[in-house]
Length: 497
Image 1 (cartoon, helix red, strand yellow):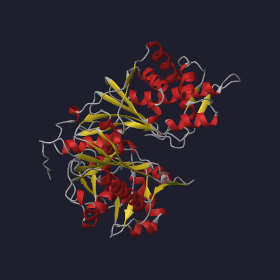
Image 2 (cartoon, helix red, strand yellow):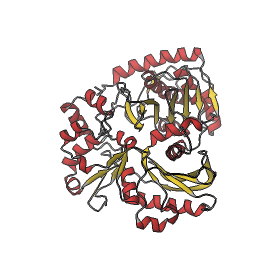
Image 3 (tube, helix red, strand yellow):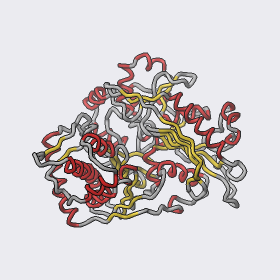
Image 4 (cartoon, one colour):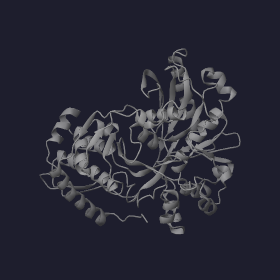
């Protein structure tokens, strides 16, 4: 359904819903994809974890929090000068919740971090070729994806499995709650490991192997397809949104790429928050490199890259455990005083296991080269370098680009780490300068759907700073990367392929 927007006025805002693992946020963006200051609703997301690998959220409570955020934002808007044009959604990817015939959850919403199905993932890798599955779906056979979770639910959560009539992502659950229609975009579905990346249908071989019918999965549709209007309950609560188009949820990684300006093969997106990721948007259906994934932004654009379990979490662990003294500015100054790879250490920073590129989920961190003269600052600097070297491995498997655009609080607050990444990658790294890249990406997609912009390139980003690589440092880090690779080969038995 195509919605026609009055082009003669600059009035109007796009609301963006951003559901992450730490918070639910609702923001407003104008027609130039600029965040409207002081318009925001935010609630904290509580993720329940345990020693068995659970990472679960109460889906109904999440909806309650989201509705409260929308209430707040609508109360802050001037409906005359700031009418809502549309609503866009970006969500944490690879979530799963079972619902009954009434649409009520029969269990928790399980997030990407949930690894309770790890044993079933190992069993599935013995039954089918992971290499073939990887090429067909763009995803590995891991506990983070739906095939292993289905196998686990069938045997370990039998009551939940029997009661559920449908299995939804958080995006599909939200659209069903507010519009009565469970829709999953190609973007969000590509993160499940159950989408055939060539046909953009639910993957028939996986469904047959798992004994799962496509009827229990959400309807697939691209993100530019508007949902039905709000149900009577929600239209009564939010009359300002009663006739406003809502668009299906896209994966947060896809939205972050768009929002930071990494919209085609010219740009490589480097994101470091608690964890890290390196992604590139490519046209069509490119082959996923070994160890990396291939998701979707939309039907025309793939998102190829890899995620790491390490990022700002490792830096925070180092700072807390080694009790680095001083405020952040002093810490950055001390770390900046080091020459590249001058500490004599080789680190595998796999404190939370490994994702890309080796997928050794049970891997542990290793620090090699310690001696009596090693200082906490040596370990801190070596840890930042070690994580950057891991990004270098992923980058080596991706197409060479003219620009690397970096975002995420952990990186943006550390000029030292930015420079290390530039030196490791051997390419300039641009600080994105974009606030809330994920929410901005959702807004840009909606503006394009509404034909208020012809393309993402019509509203380019302006990087705030550039970090230029030093050739001598790049050479030294190439040697360090070789040492890290040799240590990995000695310490880690990778289950990949």
